[in-house]
Structures are given as C-alpha cells and as structure tokens.
Amino acid sequence: MNFRDLLNHVPTPLKQSIKAKVYPNMILEGNEAPEWTLQDHEDKWQRMRSKQWTVLIFYPKDDTPGCTDQLQQFQAHLDAFKALGVAVFGVNPAEAESHKAFAEKIQIEFPLLVDRGGSVARQFKCSLPMPYGAKIIRSVYLINPERKIRLANRGAPSVEAIIRSVQALQQATKSGM
Image (cartoon, rainbow, N blue to C red; front, side, top):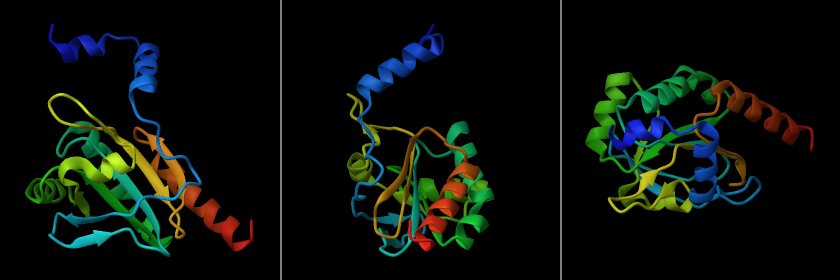
C-alpha cells in the first residue's frame, strides 16, 4: 500500500483534526486582502483591483480531477459573476504553458494566474511548506471593492452559494448596512 492509499483510509474526522493543526489559518473575513500582481496564462499582467469584486480560487494543480471540476463549476457560472461585476481568477504556481493548455482543454475563459514560487498563495495562507516544495491548499476568497475579505473558505465551496453571497453583500451595501 502506498502513502496516498494509506491516507485514503484515515477517517475523515482525524484528517480534519490534522489539517486544523497543520494548515495555516485563513485570512479572516473583514481583514484587508493582500495586494498582488501576477501574469496570467495569456502572458497578460493582472493585479488586485480596487473598486471591483474579486474571487480568487487557489487550486493545487492543473489538469487533475478535483481542480478540473472546481474550475469548470466557476466557468459554468461565469456569466452570473460578470453580471454582478465580479472578476474570477484561478491561482497556482504552474507555468503559463501549463495553465494555457489546461484552460484550452476545459474551455476556461477567466485568467489562470502564474504564482511562481507561491508568494501570493503564502500571503493568502493557502500554502503549506513541504520538504519537496510547497503544497497549495485548495481555497477560495471573495474580496469586495474595498479590498476586504468577505468570504474565506477551504476546499471547493458551492459556486451558487458564492454568487448568493455576492448578491446579498451587494444588496446590503446598497441599503446602507
């Protein structure tokens, strides 16, 4: 039995307990998001923009089943995000060529950002240092136009729930809450 098979036999509560002790705490909702500037898979520079809602999807690896499914879910709802004025970005340390091939293969229209060395993942507490290199921890952040974190979630939260959160937060802002 290899290591991965062994991990698959560890009970979920034990896995969650280990992750809670080992994984860095996410940036708390209400805190300011770190600034970033990264190149995307089309060699265009993207940066954290003021005055715009942003979703950052930190994902471990291009062209794997879990990452493919997660990014396809965001792609399926991209029109809804655009209608709400939300920019969507995928982030991981793979090179632009890998991102480009992956985006073309699964028809992703939003930018996949090249986080060489994982510096942005570290700033967002989505990186776990390992002896063989950092492991990206699957995480999603929703950032409001004032650069405040409005949602911070490990794993692959429901894209529909993120859209509902944006709608509710935008409505609350309009009504002065």
